[in-house]
Amino acid sequence: MPLVSMRQIDKYFYGTAANRQVSLEIERGEIHALLGENGAGKTTLMNILYGIYQKDGGSISWKGEEVSFSSPKDAIANHIGMVHQHFMLVETMTVSQNITLGLRSKRHPFPDRAAIDARITELSGRYGLQVNPRALISELSVGEQQRVEIIKLLYRDAELLILDEPTAVLTPLEIEQFFQVLRALRDQGHSVILITHKIPEVMSITDTITVLRDGQSIRTLRTAEADEQLLSQLMIGRPLQPVIPEVLETEGSRTALAIDRLSLTDRGIRRLDHISFEIRTGEIFGLAGVDGNGQKELAETILGIRIPQEGSISFFDTQVQQLNVQQRKRLGLAYISDDRHHDGLIMDMSLTENYLLKAFMDKRYSRYGFVDYRACRAATTEAVTSYRIKTRGTEEPVRLLSGGNQQKLILSRELSGAPGIIIAFQPTRGLDIGASEYIQKMLAQKRREGCAILLISADLDEIQAMSDRIGIIYKGALQDIISNTGNLDTTRIGLLMAGHRQTEES
Image 1 (cartoon, rainbow, N blue to C red):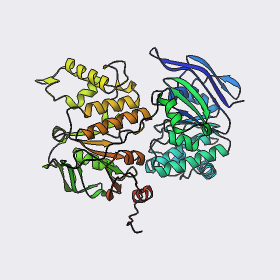
Image 2: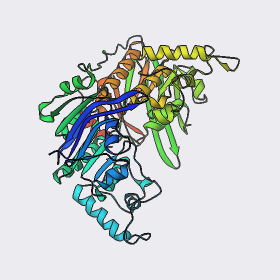
Image 3: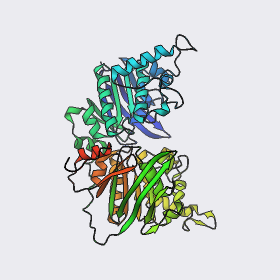
Image 4: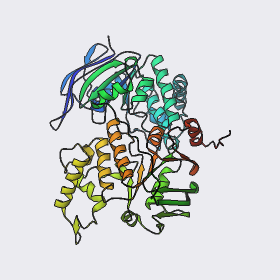
């Protein structure tokens, strides 16, 4: 008898099917991947199981009994827990306080914090979730915060853990540590549902895979029976076509972006340390590194949001240190932010209004201070068609689009007007393989057209596949710059990302 069985589940939003006749079974003591593109209905299905949404059809059985949870509180009471993609922790409180938030202890309202901390420490040790119960959430890394979310569920005796895109914010080292935790949970008899679109991770950690596409369950199979090509075929309905940029032709190219000894100190901390590099027209320069080593500061300094204490920035031989963001964009700079929700889009505004954010001063869309919405809607409609953005219309709020379609809208807006320099900061973060493939193709096309592209990514595979040269950044300093000849020493790159400088001989 399966631990949980979902049969013929239907869910509609505003008349549109998010789940259609979806079936899923989870066995005890297994790691089960719910695999699919963004918008395939994975999170919706799990939100139904967790009690956030109510199903419009079908049935759910938990330990052989039919159930229908009216809220997450009901699901937790039945030992089902969920860790959402965006963590739900109070940063000003301690780990211990977050874990017990909402629970009534025997000594309420004065809980025995020493006993609680001892229980948390015991759970931490049992599952390899090392965390200090007395640390403030604001002091923890993203990986440590994720451990707190998992301990929170284990503290409530969760037998089934639902993890929504758990590796999206983790470094490669944290991902491997996280997989060790998942194996420990499975070995202790827990079941885990992994909502993801990352096929290599599914192949390395799961026991069973269920593929969703367009809101429907396509197939369930054992991981041992699958391979990456089959899973990509099931996910997107066609074989994956990897993007491999052509060999760079340097003859006739010129320096588009020049960074010389750029340094930035913020709140007494050295964020950028004498960084120097150049990017030529028709070149993709990849910047590899673990998140938080100065990538954000570098991108924002080039854009003009931050002002460096030392160094210079040139666009096509024009010094731009004294120019503001708009002036730099008029010189041909395009910027794709790493955080589309906070930096790239205004979520409650429509596609048309978001498209206008870059072009509101453009004479094609405004005259004498008045916006020509007809012209802007026409441009947005053209962008929706050209970039294959799935939407009900240009007046639809952006928040209702999937992550991949939101990123396509940003791409269509930022790449309009024939930019000469593109900063692509984590352009495929959190996207499924279909959307990632499309965005990589667009960047490769812009490279062919002569754009100079700074590709900043924590995904080393993406950096290797797309870049002509690769710079490795650690604590705000460039460790090395390597030509990508297709035969890179990934071990050496990994060591450089961790701050270990090595000579070729050593």
